[in-house]
Amino acid sequence: MVLSRLIYSSQPFGYDQPMLNGILADARTYNPKNDITGALICREDIFLQLLEGPEDRILFTYNKIINDDRHLDIELLVKELCDRRIFPTWSMKDDPAKTWFWTKDEIDSGILTTVSKSDLLGVFDKVALNLKD
Image 1 (cartoon, rainbow, N blue to C red):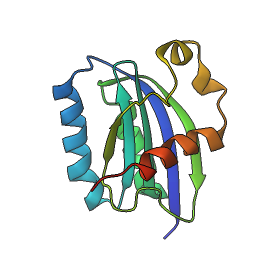
Image 2 (image 1 turned 90 degrees about the vertical axis):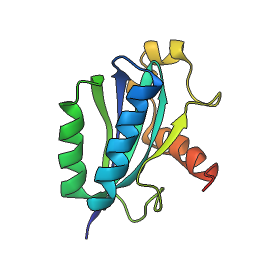
Image 3 (image 1 turned 90 degrees about the horizontal axis):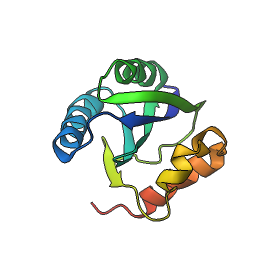
Image 4 (image 1 turned 45 degrees about the vertical axis):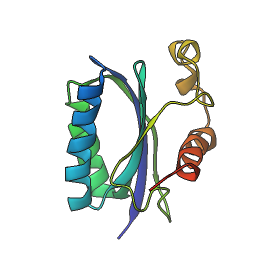
């Protein structure tokens, strides 16, 4: 199996805890059946999500997200083959954006269009280091 990783950002539409709970419940049901793992960093102004798994299933899932009305302004930031998962035991880890994450002003100013792939992966590496099962 070829392992693939995809990172995208979007703006939440109608962000609140019930909406976030619905996204996480959907992912935690769907992802294990499709050998997908990952993490969702979230707050009212941004979703930053990493998906990892078989390339065909990752692309199919991303297309479902594109058509999900809970997401606006979806931007594909990274799509690559990889040799290991960052979140091997998480069908979908959620992480409220912490202080080490970009500010709302930085997001509004378009930092995600200029940030490097290694910086994006670094954000998820930090989330993975803080996992509490």
